[in-house]
Length: 61
Image 1: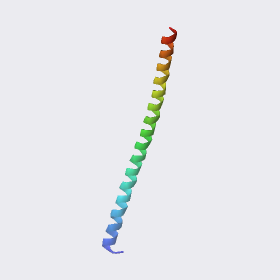
Image 2: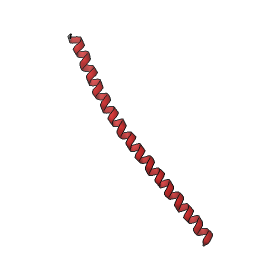
Image 3: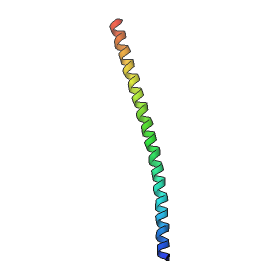
């Protein structure tokens, strides 16, 4: 392998390493986003339940 080919391989290995780092960070962001979506869905459900209880209380009370 020539010196130039060796340099190309080194650069490609560095690029692969950086791409793997970026991929891992994106996976973490995706996990966090999913957790936030789940949290917001739960909060929306709780808010709707509270609104329903308040409406029923106003009707009865």
